[in-house]
Image (spheres, rainbow, N blue to C red):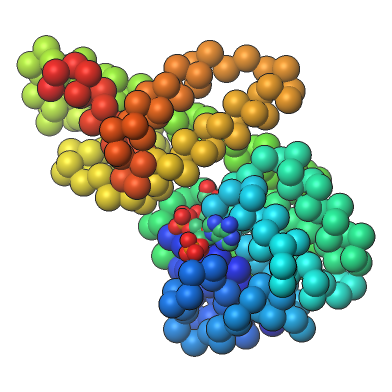
Length: 286
Ligand code: NA7
């Protein structure tokens, strides 16, 4: 297929690379020049990348970035033809995504929210999970592309529902990791050796996918970003915004937000979100 891929960050670049490897004709664009994908053509603007594309796939930081790439000067929307499908894998506010969908549909195209879970490792290995809000027929058309970049794609419902589900899942990730981090700090402060503690965690009901994934990095004190803290913090704000819009209270998340605020303030925003542990350790005098 002819695919425009917009946004070559930690997630977008390996996703685009996997599309090229599968034999698709990919044209990439990134705001900062110099980020490229082997085997892909490079466009000077989103509009140029999207010209003649059947699919326009985006993976950029936040709502503002999505709006700029689609509807800003030389935005991809200028090249939308009847039948073009725009797929957004950025994590943004569901209500903002719905507005993008309306604008793309008014040009005869279709729009899909397809945020991902799986981090950098999943993107590189083509093992992402796509969490999708889309019309059923459009979702079906995209199956081969989801299969190229991921291990599964779940259609949650119509537009916006993929993002709504993704935010709820990231809420669990943020709270689960914070529970793990607080447990480690409390144990360490009491002089508990972390190796046997990890062995106990792995054998008991407190074991979790989040802990399985993060523990090796945490135990190795490797806080380089797989999922940067600045992006998880952005997601926490999206969750709190969505909660306000829907009359939901999230007291646990509000508390975790304060830990992130402190950690970002300490200069950890470009480290992995696991580095919130460093902030907890610091306040415990460890
Ligand atoms: P990264 O590695 O921070 O990459 C972000 C990408 O978004 C990168 O290509 C940026 O371009 C691009 N970006 C950021 N702001 C803009 C604006 N205003 N206009 C155009 N392009 C922009 O993030 P990830 O790849 O880890 O994550 C991407 C999304 O998936 C995000 O929503 C996560 O929560 C999930 P740059 O290279 O900085 O010029």
